[in-house]
Length: 197
Image (cartoon, one colour):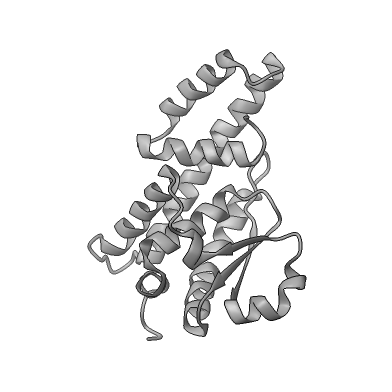
């Protein structure tokens, strides 16, 4: 299966929901490291291949001067490896993909649709499903960082996250996003990073 697109392959193994959940953790998690626990070597290899194809550019994007959001460093292990080496992962965000991908969250629903769209959209010779996913992640991170910077400014002026600050941030957010479906994800990014309550 070496010629198969990395996103297409991992979706076949983990489902669009599972991949959407992985992206959710990568985007919202403020800790330096996330460990994704999968069920088999094949799933591990496929997810690592996708992350290797997507994360270098995402990391580079978030290292730009003035960019506020940093993405977590991902690691992928099988359940068996995790059970043997769990002490090595102290301090990391542990994500058991199979158990947690069913999380009821609008943000994960949105990312599942992003993954489906990247895989199912008509193929173009020069744009792979993995490329589409990477571009969407960069777009979302760019908009989230705009809102993050605005929220920091507003909270600095107000000194607290009150109803007026919330309204101001919500108004700004609705002007920045391209689809209302992104709003819960961007709120989660802000909330998990401690910007809003």
